[in-house]
Image (cartoon, rainbow, N blue to C red; front, side):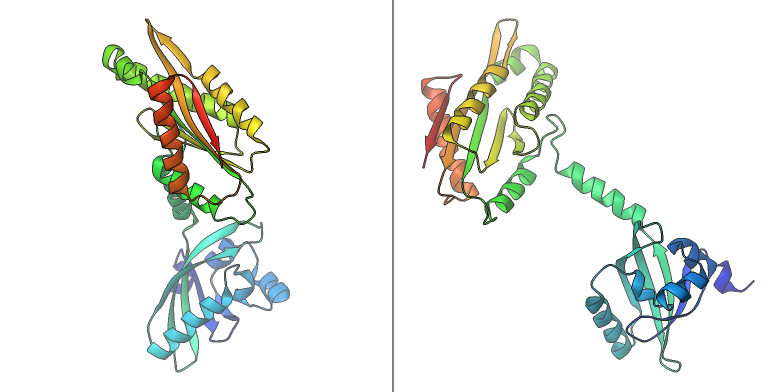
Length: 280
């Protein structure tokens, strides 16, 4: 058995043409893609490019540049196998100018992409509340605001009154449990259609896209106040809210946040456990 067949990675010899037409490939390659040698010939005319789902023009530019500079191609792209699964492929190709061919080794790195995706997902989540953390929250809201389909928007800035006192007297374990419960309750109140997050400490934020009316915002505010009330040995923790309803969609994330913060500050200084909502 030749080295070509012994190697556990997919190995191919391909023409230097727009399709990377396969001249020869090992069993590991056919096992990877799920098609037999005969099927690749009959269905795709041995065109490796037929499996690729990423932008072929970009890939061909890299191929052309490798030929001109005599460099080894080392890049990643996605293919679709016979089952319909999308695989991430790490491709290393060496060009042979004498025969105008590429000697190619490909490796399935889908597992790595899944790990990276999970890491990215978890890095956006606050570990206690299981809501978005501050960075992810700001990023997602800014992306929403840039959407021209949004006709109005609203923001709730929520602060837990007496939370520091609870932490100081009952310990962080009790405080952490309150944060977890707040995360669960906000999810129940708003569901998946709105952006929810924890800014840090005892401060939370909710962004609403295209609320149907000011009345619905009053309804949500009352629901938050009614659900976020905790009593631990006479230490009462409840929510204060500063809210903004922007009917013109003229405010940026920073402006919405600052206006909500002003309303929250006024609430906490005049009527703790209540809310102030202003409409523009």
